[in-house]
Amino acid sequence: MTDNRFCNPEYVKVLENLSGWQKRAWFDGDWDIASGQFFTTFRRDVHVVEDFDDTRAVEWWAALDYGYAHYTVALLGCRDGDGNVFVVDEHAQRLWLPQRHSNAILAMLGRHNLVEKELKRFVAGADVFSRQSDGTTIAQQYARQGINLRVANTDRVNGWAEILHRFGDPENGIVPTLFIHRRCGRLLETLPALQHDRTGLKTC
Image (tube, rainbow, N blue to C red):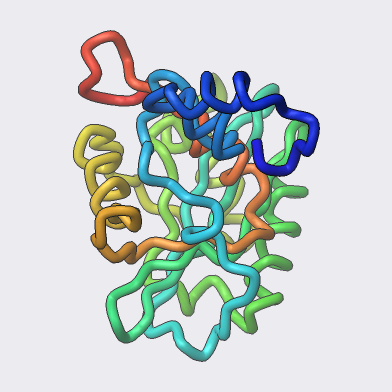
């Protein structure tokens, strides 16, 4: 609101009297918030980092969400010596075959001077391990390209709770321990948009 020199005082008062997500969006200009948002403590100015020194990492891992018509996304993350978690890189593309994704993922690892065997784990959803009509799996296709996947723990309720915990609550003095590099555009687009389901207990 303060960016607009032409707001009249009456309209400013209307915005000042709003509450919740509407005040954050319309008065403060924070468009990472919406009605029903799950990760309400996410703050772009806090949780998004412009740079990261790879030598800080004491443990590396990666995760794959496979798709064809929808995005295949691979995220590269690490933990530093203080227990902070950083998502430092991302590969996200649609309508690609595993062979092409594999080349891009290995290139992503190369940007951080990593090879697949240096990761503590590289996980993917159970669908990647389901046998197709010819008896093969998507995981086997990735393995032939040098990427060995393990089945991920897909307990979403506890997973989202862990992310909430790690985001902290900067406005109330709870220090965050999860940060995302600005190059992870797909993650930064979708994570703030996740919403509660009707019960308010999990995301949908």
